[in-house]
Image (cartoon, rainbow, N blue to C red; front, side):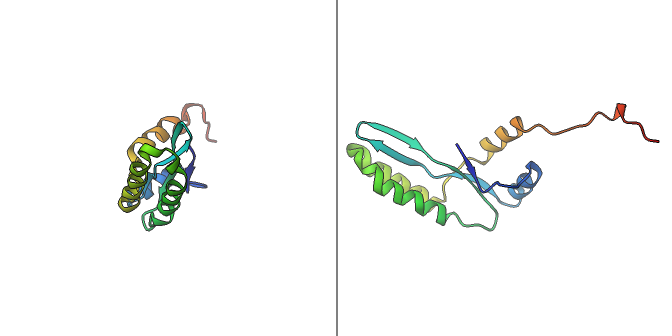
Amino acid sequence: MKTNNTEGLTMFEINVLIQQGGRFVIFPNTISKLVKKFKCSNIYFIRPEEKTFKYALKHFFVNLAVSWRAFPLAPIYVVTSLYYLIKGGKDYTQTILSELNRNNPVYNPNTQYLQFN
């Protein structure tokens, strides 16, 4: 999955923004092609002062337009989308932060070999 709104941010800056109230959220999408259903979404990094409504509304309209093809469960998908629109998305901050920390190691130089003249 692609993480949006983290372009140009270092891990240190992301950690500081999370301590100030930032979070990683996902808005669930269900795309159906006759028999098959695909559940997918992008990950959004929401900064402390930012509102989630602009991201959630887009996903709600996608669910409203596309998930109706999965006839028996379509109303459930649209209601779930509306629920997460109101709630502000599923919060995946701790999961994604632990994954980022595991895959982005901190550089610790070995100062034993540095010579200062």
